[in-house]
Amino acid sequence: MDLKLISVTERDSITTIHVDKLDKGLITMKTISELTHVLHYLEDESECKFVLFKGSRDCFGRGMDIDHFYPSKIDYEGFRKWEEMLKAIETLEQITMAVVEGECFGAAIDLVLTCDVRLASEQATFSHDEVKRGILPGQTIFQLGKFCGIGKMMELIQTGRKYTAREAVEMGIINAAFPPPKMDDAIAATLEKYAPVNMNILMLSRRLAKESFHIGYEDFIGGYLAAQHRVISKGVAGEPDPDDSEII
Amino acid sequence: MSLEEYTTVDTKQRFMEGIAKNSYPQIVSVATANPPKKYTQVEVVELFGTTDPKVIKLFKKSHIKGRYLYLPEPGANGIIRNETNHELISKHLRGSLELGTEVTRKCLSRRGVDISEIDHLVCVTSTGLLLPGVSAHLLKSLNFRKNVRRTDIVGMGCSAGVPSLRSAAEAASSGAPGKKVLLLCIEICSAAYVGYETIQAAVVNSLFGDGAAAVLVETQKDPSSSPQGANIIGFECRTLVDHMDLLKYDLFENKENKISLILSKELPYVIGNNIEDVVYGLLNNYGLKKRDISHWVIHAGGRKVLESVKYNLGLTNHDIKHTMAVHEEYGNMASGSVFFSFERFLKENTAKRGDLGVLIAMGPGLSIESALLMW
Image (tube, rainbow over all chains, first blue to last red; front, top):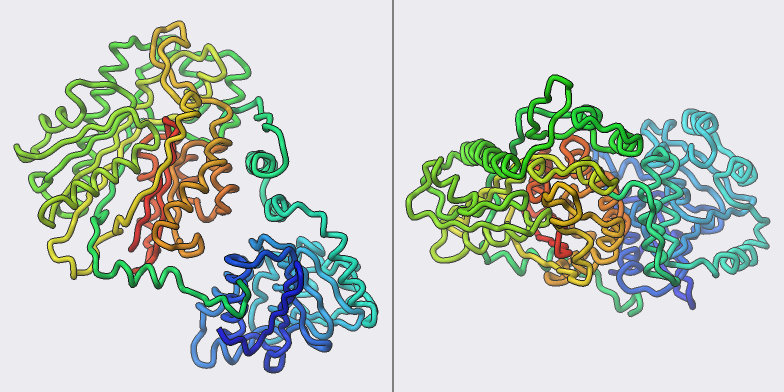
């Protein structure tokens, strides 16, 4: 596929997806198609350990191009494909990192929230401006509260107000913010911090962590034991010690 | 391979183009049936007069909300007496005929097929040994054609639904097109109950329910006509003989001299360790990726088995919601369970032309069976 709206660089164990050629920073079906192509490549062929999503210096993304998705009728298929693409990021077997410099609005924040690590430049600004544009926020409604709490989430999605990178860090939406000249060093240091992560457990720990928010302990424990067994039997060493209580 | 070299091959598209010319046996009707009475877990444990607090706790904290069972009426003390071997065997035959008849009529009427049109009857059960088998008894009580072929599949346990579907598909595909094969999975699990003398026996008694499923498989006389149901594309399986002892019948483990089911704690984890091999083996046979599969229907084996399958295959609760619902509302009905889940899925009416689905069942052997379907 000839990529027009995004570009990809691969260096050592890092694949960087540059989302920096979107027209006015808006996401269209073509954007989704190109991102999906790259995600399929990462799933099928790539042996990288890290996947970075980066925008340009002044824009990571400004949300969906509403006119593109429903000029005359609502393109549910388009919204569905965006949600499927986010799910594909969530199930990647690589550590994902969003690096936000500049404006990050609407659906672009969905992508950021899906990543394992979220870094921002101190000049980055955020806004869940869908409500101002007459549509609902997408997966943001499902994800954002887990990072900042329901109270803050309600304020942000119902007002659509802008907030800074510092505020985003304080709310837990972003892991850390850095002055622009220090971004590259910050990214490198973060990658080094995550380098020892056992890839075998990455996906499962990510999944279990997110599931812990919406299932009770009795439902969680069975999945945790199954996941732990997989990790041990496929990864490190030793026979697992099966749970002694309920058998099935 | 670099990104520049990588070409998105639409694996599903390629698969669809590859099979367009062939015609496959199709699942054109599914029906299920259960005994008239449903019991909650608390009712069951009270009816058996259990006082062991560990057993009571096990039943109460089960994810299974209720099961349909053929249980005898309690005595004056409100407790069911232990059934003899003879009573259990008789119950199995009686239940098989009752549920087999009901589910056959439902399945055929949904398709407007008369029983005399059935060319081959495949009967599956592992909860009672009859000679002659269930199929002969059903031939006697129902109006099958006098030259109907029949096959009894015994001893494959919970996984039997999928390999018996393979047998039905192969029978439908043999000879001239237009064949109709009726597959019946009839399990009277309450005919295999023993007392609660061990926690293991209690686990088994808390898990299994009675039920029957019928599946009508046809090949179309005109291969170019539109499909009438799910095309049965292919199968893949593994029998892990080194783990055979994890799930088996045993005559000698209880004081009642009844056949009892041995169910090992390791079972969910061994299945989890091996399920990828089977499922990816199935998909690789057709050049497909997991992302090409829209629908997953799995045998409701037990909570821990389902968790193990989910986390090893990367499936979500939504992916297996019909299986989870069947497990909660019916328990494990052995071979027919997978078709209870499949019937639920069909009723949802979400399968679109071109969708691909995978059926998975696991059982004694230790076997993991899978089938690829296409709408």
